[in-house]
Length: 377
Image (cartoon, rainbow, N blue to C red; front, top):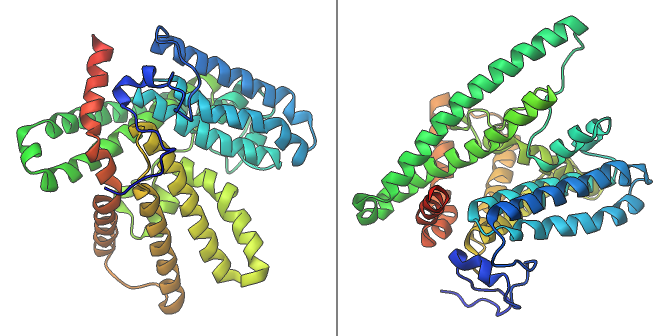
């Protein structure tokens, strides 16, 4: 195993509460051993609501750019630390994804008078919900009449919640079956053959459940239509189709205005249209890889191996190659089924190489089962 700098902490994730009191832990606020997970969740929730209420009522009245940025940076800093109040790897990683990544990017965009939060300044509950949760409102293509709008909204709320509940139930079934299969003797004996596909099902089901559950209260309580988080990624015909239009769309919608468009605009005059597009794509995947590495650190509390960063940087280069190939030879006339098979095979092969090894090494499925048993006891 490679040697890592000594300033990276090496801790036991199952004893994180005690570890957070250690002076060498660089990313944690002090936590009392008596503080229960429910108390910690309440603290994180209240801190998030108060911080975002401050942004809505005070920061929004400041001039954009530097004044807003100065007032917002302490909250951005706080949101990097709040997830470490939670000892559960599940809650900690979810909080890091919501606050340290998605919410912080939305706040930084808001400082420069950009991003989705500008749509929700009219309402404090809307602003807090759409800042803290990985959801985005679906913008209407046309303006219907008031009666038609109410009828459509009522129909959407019931159909959306019902369909989402069914999909969450299906996702839970897949998750529990995957966890059970990973714990069998066959999976332990044939790890190279059985574990990667089971982790594919497990990670997709967990991510889908989490993102879908977050949309239900927002849609029902605020009466708005939410953009779907996924659009059948299993029928992607290219890497651009998968990353740009089908997979984890809230991340795509956040990275595009926060990284892609600023980098492309900055490089356009210096490099020209196509090179600027390629550089912006690489920069976007690099940032995505670094943020995923942060989430992996929340899961493992181990020195970073940069495998997840490498996975996304690799796909950045693969996607730029795909763009150059399309620019050079035009659309390739292949059967749709073949393009889907090639795309999914490439995604799976690179995931087995770089994405799955870190979570397999720490036994993520065993830790998840342990946390479930602890929660049920």
